[in-house]
View 1 (spheres, helix red, strand yellow):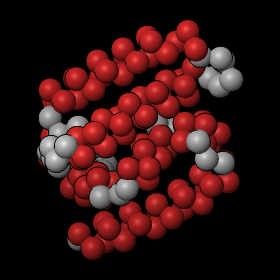
View 2 (cartoon, helix red, strand yellow; view 1 turned 120 degrees about the vertical axis):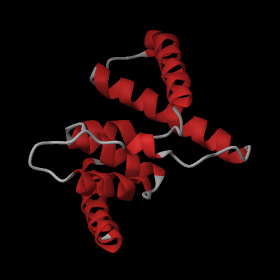
View 3 (tube, one colour; view 1 turned 135 degrees about the vertical axis):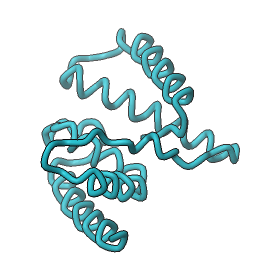
View 4 (cartoon, helix red, strand yellow; view 1 turned 90 degrees about the vertical axis):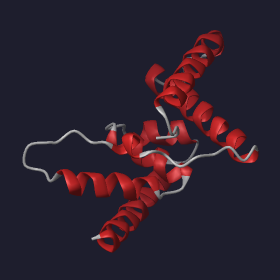
Amino acid sequence: MYCSSREDREDLFQDIVLQLWRSYPSFRGGSKVTTWMYRVALNNAITRVRKESRAGRFAELGPEAFMVPAVEGDSGEEMAAMYRAIQRLSQVDRALTLLYLEDCSYREMAEVLGISESNVGVKLNRIKGQLRTLVSIEE
């Protein structure tokens, strides 16, 4: 979601793996390993986007970033519209949405984003409203 091309995604993946390797000795075990990994990955991705936007090299995500496999009983166009709506969210809201789609608990989402669990709930409700509006506008 934070890269516009396959090559950029591969570079970001390598950066994240390297940062995980370097950071592992400082992992204190205060949270689940997966929560810590999400936080490292998210911070790495956001830092990369900020650097690129400061340098003026930020490109919009290409359509391949939002290619969604067809799910039986779902309209592929509805899924594509939802992913386009997610793309229009802020970085933090997009990250929260992706954590939600990964079935993370409110506690895990709160730890990854550095916010309270109740704030996660409030933000998710607002995001759902935004997505409903964005998808209905597109239709």
